[in-house]
Image (cartoon, rainbow, N blue to C red; front, top):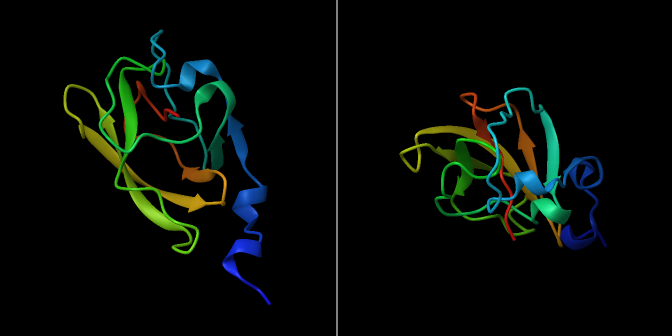
Length: 127
């Protein structure tokens, strides 16, 4: 019998890892930009953390000026692939935003990124 818990979604198997410490929301640093990221599926892991934040993040972290966070909750496995707004904090918690896709793969999340709305903005991870 096929259930959501044993179905293998392609994005849960075919993603790029974001694992550098400078992607974590606690990291300071210089000003990188995710203008050229994606389109594609990504997973936060290792030193970058395990997922995106779901509340406003401090600016000037994650090796960028405008830090990212999901405006809403991460989906359950049963919700499937969902669209979520990602906000970028630069003197305003939702200074600029973009929509992304998110999938709960059971023990981790994957995110479909396709650039950022402005340079000096970056997708950031947390624990």
